[in-house]
Image (cartoon, rainbow, N blue to C red; front, side, top):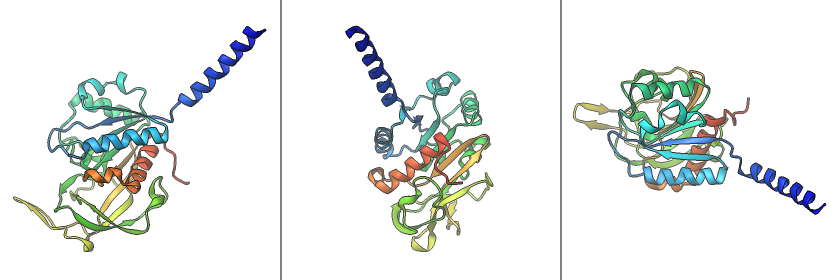
Length: 255
């Protein structure tokens, strides 16, 4: 009789352990660079690992595209996060694997210089939505919330000050499906920049974070995230987790 009760108790404990160990979703964090290497990558990795602990999801961090961008490696992941990636980081075969991943109904999150990545790949340009052109010196500006019906946006007031590196994006329209979350008020900072023959004078209407449903999957992008200390800011972390959560699960938007 005691053996029977012991077996039952062990089964219950095993069942409860499995419930506790089960994670919400699994994220692949990719930080490969082939150009500028942001100092904030280490802080970003640390922050996302802490978000995973706090919000009960798995995260795997890698920089080796050859090892990671295969169907076998990615099959158990729900979302791919490009954290401050730059320039040409995937070959043709790896691009096809990434494309199939999104088309299978899964998600993408791009942070800051993810828009400074894979310029020669039209599909990726459309996935991100806008591509980096130039930026002025880091400075304080006022951000404005355009959409509160998205996870993570609930922490922001309608207008607030923020210090970052303000990306001006190319004029090309890569996607018509972008749902803008945040814009930067260009009257509150100096947007002019000139790098040789490349010049930026501001965009007028200046989106800085957005999301979209794309090619069967989901895509979230935020241009915030240049300065290392930003990855300790609770508002930014909620904004980032909201994007990861939605891209991985499709949840959080009130219909």
